[in-house]
Structure formats: structure tokens, C-alpha cells
Image 1 (cartoon, rainbow, N blue to C red):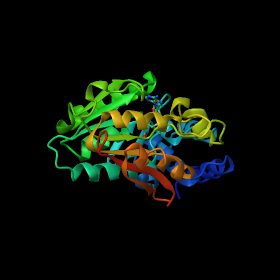
Image 2: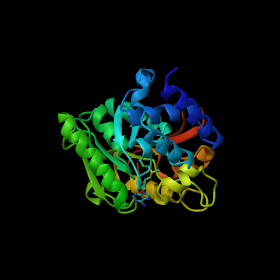
Image 3: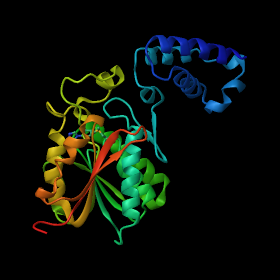
Image 4: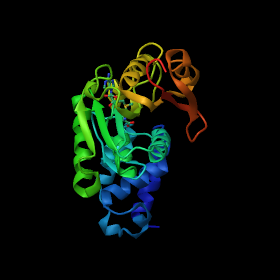
Length: 290
Ligand SMILES: C[S@@+](CC[C@H](N)C(=O)[O-])C[C@H]1O[C@@H](n2cnc3c(N)ncnc32)[C@H](O)[C@@H]1O
């Protein structure tokens, strides 16, 4: 054993006591971050190089600050995103919906598909689409100026480091309701992970104290933002355009009925996340009066 591995064991026990869901993993990732080594290299850190700042960062996690705020990174599909105070930390369940959109766009017979990511946060969805569908042009809309600054930072990073992504993601200030009016009737795919938690519902401290309120709460049934998105999507989509919207696990049936055939939507489908819970709805917009 090494000093660092001993300290990690003690830290993991402290995190478990504090109610952290994956205490050993988090202790190891914090140790790797502080010592500037990959997680697999922790046992190679000499005892003389043990950095006591490890315990400062463990104390932050013990106080239930999200791991990603401590390390400053969130991994999303093939992206390494900068995150911190003021922006929603992207979640693995959103990777599944983003994968659905990437497959749909890849199969589209359109030279340069136009995509709208509404409520982009860190830019996770928009940047993944630009990275994995290099022909796409992605409009990323965000109302919250703090969150938008994180999106702009991540978009700049990828524009500078991945030449084919330069100029492919455009960040816009705007609200779901009035977003991107100059693109009305021309968008191939609208995608959103909106706020969808009913006001007053219980969420873990990492969420309630560190994710921005605008990213979480959405009226008494959690569906206010999704109803606004339905109206915006029917305005933005071209005939045959596609929609994907994430929602909470218990909301599958309710969200299905926000996109019914009676309102003109076609092929409305529920999809599950990796844990088998209802997680997002997709639909096709055939055009007004089709
Ligand atoms: C759940 S977060 C999702 C962020 C990102 N798309 C992701 O999946 O990680 C929802 C985002 O929508 C933004 N938002 C909430 N209401 C909005 C509105 N009316 N118009 C535009 N953006 C909004 C929030 O600020 C937040 O960044």
C-alpha cells in the first residue's frame, strides 16, 4: 500500500458517511485530479508526493459539492466539458437521447442538417452533435447568461482544437418561447433537455444547491417548459423535421400527450434511458395541416 491509497480509503469512508453515492470512485477521481495523474496511476504516486490539498477537496465533496465542480470537468459522450457554478452538470441519461439524434441526423438525406438545441447549458448536446455529425449546423439557445458563458467557453475550446467543428455551433441568447424566429420552418431537428422537475419535489443536495434553479424547476407538474417547447418546435421544424425532448422518469405518459396526433404530430414515441426508465420523447412534424 502507499500513503495515497491509505488516505483514499479513509476519504472513501468519510464520503460514504456523508451519503455520497459512489464514495470510492469519487475519492479516487479527486486524488487523481489533485495529483495530476490518471486514476489508474494512483498507486504509483510516491509517499513524498502526497498533496495535502486532497483533504480540502474531499471536504468539499463531503459537503455534497458535485464532483464535477471540484475537478472542473464533465465527460459527455466523447467530450470533456468545462463546468462549474452557474451551469447544469450534464448527465449520462442525456447521452442516450443525444445518441438517438445523432443517428437520426446521420441517416437524414440533407446536405447540412440544421439543429436547434434549446436550453444548451454547458453546450453538451450541441457540441456532441457537431462533433459526431460534422455536416450539421447547430444553434444552441440559452436564456441564462451564466450558463451561456460556459457554453461559449466550451464552444471556443472545440472550435480551436477541432478544425471541422469551428463555426458549426452558434450560441444564442434567447428564451424557449421566442427562440430563433429567423429559422422558422427550416430546422431539421429540435432537441432539448429542459427543466422538468415539479416545484417542491425532493432532489439530492448536489442538485438543489449547485445546479442552477432555471435548469431544474418547471411548474407544478414539471411540464411548463416542455409545453413551451412544443409550440416552438412546431414553429421551427420543416415538414418532416424531428423532435427529441428529455423528461423525468415518471413523466413518460404525460409528455407523450404533449405531442399528440390531434395537434399534428406523427410517430410520437417514448424512449428509455440506460436504467430502463422512461427518459425522452421523439416525434415527427409533418407540417401545418399535413
Ligand atoms: C436541464 S438544463 C440542460 C442543459 C444541457 N442541455 C444539458 O443537457 O446538460 C436546462 C437548461 O435550459 C435553460 N433554460 C431554462 N429555461 C429556459 C428558457 N425558458 N429558455 C431558454 N433556456 C432555458 C437552463 O438555463 C438550463 O441551462
